[in-house]
Image (cartoon, rainbow, N blue to C red; front, side):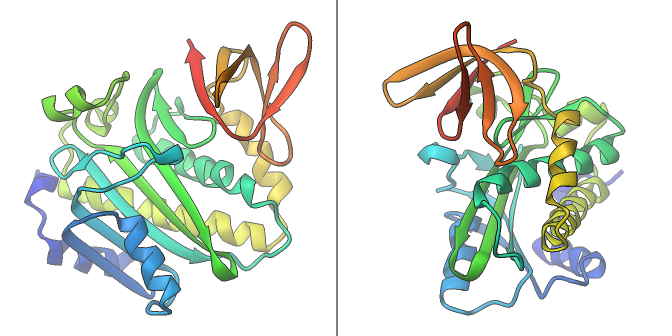
Length: 266
């Protein structure tokens, strides 16, 4: 079995072009600051037709939500971004992380045959209470969106030292080394799944998509602490509303949370 670490940049692009025929442009770099920023720049300068995909072996200035550092290295992390045009205009864009999170979970569940891969609201992918991946979504003019993802492929000492939380990897989930075919299949499956769910929004399928959230929600019924600015709220997570806001019930009240970091007490 050929390891993903033996893949060349040309080999990655060639295989992806074979499967992602609906994508106008597919690129891969040895290194870059941020694949999200690269695609945002291309779109702003009207230099790329959509949808398009950009991946990298090394990302030295990656970003997470709320300005967090996104640590990526080819030895341990699969990282790429896709840009799409959102054809529907009348939609609360705050729901997008939920839609993309559902699409990501369903895609990874199918690839791994593991139904317990789930979403920690709003944008982290978990397996057995450990973080597998993080998603960053950015929206720019004319409803163009960029979706970036970093997936832990193999946990190295370097990755474990830099991330102050429990993490897992694709290698642990599938219980085998990650082959080059596995690597390509993950990129292909996620890209097509994102495109499919975005198209569903354009076909007024939003309510049916939101109903799927409960099947991947790892917070439901658990104690959570919502940290925002200098305050915190503790309660029980009770799913989301139709805008994608997290519902948290406390002893005295029910809160809906849009922004803030979610600290989970498993």
